[in-house]
Amino acid sequence: MLLLVLFGPFAEQLPDPRHLPFAMAIAIAYAFVAVLLFVFGRKGNLRICTLAGISADLFFGILAIHAIPAAGTGIALMLIFNIGAAALLLPTRYGIGFALAAVGGLIAEHLWSSMIDELPGVSLVQPLMFSVGYMAMATLTSLLGRQMRASHALAEERGEQTAHLVEVNELIIRRLRTGVLLVDGHNRITLANEAAIVLLGGAKEEDWQLDAVLPELARRLTAWRNGAKPDETPFQPSPEFSEVVPRFTRLLAGSDQTLIFLDDTSLVSKRAESITLSTLGRFSASLAHEIRNPLAAINYAVQLLEESDDIRPADRRLLEIIRQQGGRMNGIVDNVLGLARREPAKPEHVDLVLLTRQFINEYQAGHPLEDDSLTSTSTRPALPAMVDPRQLHQVLTVLVHNALLYGRKPGEAARITLHVATESNGGVRIDVLDRGPGIPERQATQLFKPFFTTSPHGTGLGLYIARELCRANQATLEYVPTPGVGSCFRIRFPASAARAAA
Picture 1: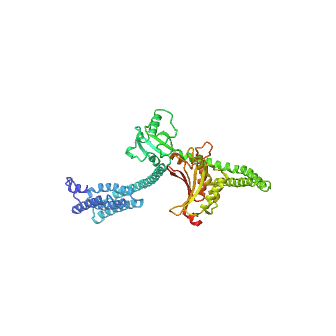
Picture 2: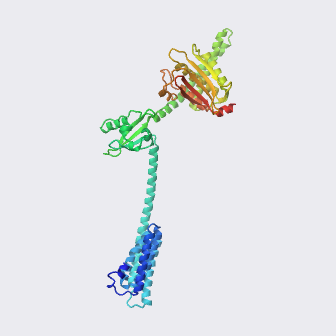
């Protein structure tokens, strides 16, 4: 505007400036500084740019008021907006400071004009009125700026908290075991968490069409949208995944977008198993007392019979078998109680080759095999390991009993082999081998689950307890498929157990 006043079409209407060359120099210098601030200050620090801008405004504005007295009132009036803007953007002390600087500049210019230039008719009222206006504007805009900065800081804080909560919610939804799908009105999957993506079978996002990837779920969703009662029976998305139960809900009232929750039934099954096993532990603790009483009576009666001289040698052998099996039953009760209470095993230095042979002799003495056979083999004469022999005896009893029941082909005798061998990593294993028809793959995945059985007279706890007993001895029990040959249950002892025993 100074350039327009001095060099534009209104220059002839302006009374002669007090110092025309000085006024032109001020206008040109002011324009140059403004261009520099515009070019280099757009990406700089706001406070520094504001300090530089208001300093230039006050410096050149006061000089222009002195050089162009006819435009002095307008220039002084326009400086009010510069001071207000500076007080709005800067801290309070800076805003008030620049207002005081502007007041000092106006009074200094007035004294310069009246005392040094000795110009007549110059009144002090006008500078004082502008000074009051500068201070009032600076105070009001400073208060407004303080509130704006506080509101801005609060908004940023709330924004950060909201962003953090959004990230937390996204993480929770993403890591949920429950699958979450968002489906639009055309059965297009728009969002899915990690659990749901696994159920989609690794399909690419552009192929997320519910009718293609999960047709059964799409059928149920269509029926639900048509007003049918939700079908919440479990279904299996694919053979490699467990069953899920779908639940539907609209994202918003009247919206065609639907949220689908896919609850994994395995979690519910594990919870039910945990409750059942806990109940079984309490039940076994109360049952142990009832079992041990008759066992104690049987053992006492056997001891009395063994002291009699009227017992034949053949009958004494039967009494010995009764006493051994009574002691073994008492040990089984102890193991079940220990499993319920999670009591640690009591490992000893054991020769697995010798232990399997002793086990076979004891098992044949208490369980007549008739046409069936139970043998032991080994790759070395002796293979030591650290294990609780009572618990290992119980595990082998369960495995051999199952092999005799299920490890035979129709019309043929059972052939059971206990094979003891070393492994490449230095560990030792015992394989319980049979020559039966094998175990179907679908059943093999559930062998060690509690209460799973294919026999109407079984409890489904034998293999589960056997595996838990192996874990208590730092060993593992697993089923090894041997297609066309039979079945193999393998007990693995770690290398550390073999080295410790050796």
